[in-house]
Image (cartoon, rainbow, N blue to C red; front, side):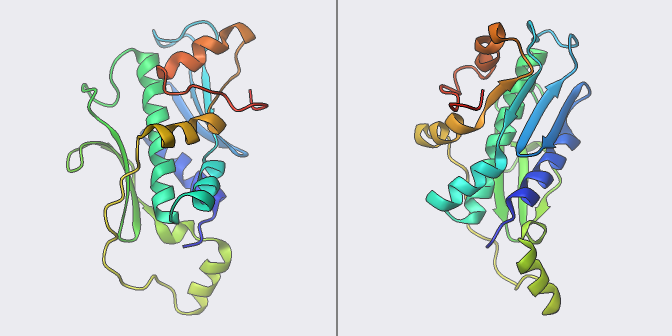
Length: 208
């Protein structure tokens, strides 16, 4: 499957923005997916900490080129975005999010013709995004071919369950190039990066 990275990032941002609580914003600007909160509104905000960004397009392209199938990489990158959003919000409000349990894990899975995104257990959704149709993620050339041929994806059985991993190698590969603190004074960089409690160990050189 040939995925358009920009289309994927735009739809991912829209789905996350739809479930963000009041006072928080999710926005895609160029190649950055930003998580923002209203200044001074939440107890976990310290100093100039307001903004965190990731690179979903770069994540997706890198994963497809080096690691796995398009479907698996979409799920991996989507789960990473869900996890970053969850940890950012939880630190700001100083309580678990979503819900009242710290076990509402971020999850992403391709089922049949849809990419599903949610927080919770395998069969127990605490908060879910609207699923993303895979056909909406195709590169324009493939979309045109399908329309000219009468549309539609061929019928097929749902794909095997493909959970994105949380192993150290995967976390390291994603964390190093993708996450930065932005809109902050130089003195606040250490505190802002620390908001995800050690998940991020290195910043991409030249991105900060």
